[in-house]
Length: 131
Image (cartoon, rainbow, N blue to C red; front, side, top):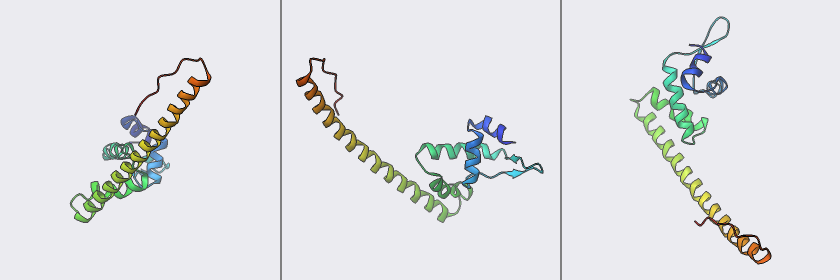
C-alpha cells in the first residue's frame, strides 16, 4: 500500500510516517517511480509506534524497544526492551514528582497572591485550588 493508504488506515499523517521511516522505526520498499510502498504488517507496527510515543518514549527509545517485537524469542532482545521500558517508567515517575513539586510551589505563590489581592483590593477573592 502507498503512504496515503497507510495514513488513512492508521490515522497517522504521511509526514509522521516519513519521520518514522527516517528514524528507522518503519520500513518501506520503493517503486520504480520512487513511491513508498508498505506491507499490511506495517499497519500494526504504526499502531505500536503510536502507543510507544503516547507512553512518552522518544524515537530513540522506541528504536531500542521495537526489536523485541521483531525477534520475540531472543532473550537478550527481550531483556533489553524490558530494561529500557523500566528506565522510561522511572524517568516518567521522576518527571511526575518534579511536576508535583512545581505545582505545590505555584500553589504557595497563588495563596500569597490571593491574600495580597484581598489586602489591596476590594475585588472578590477568587477560589484558589488547593493541593
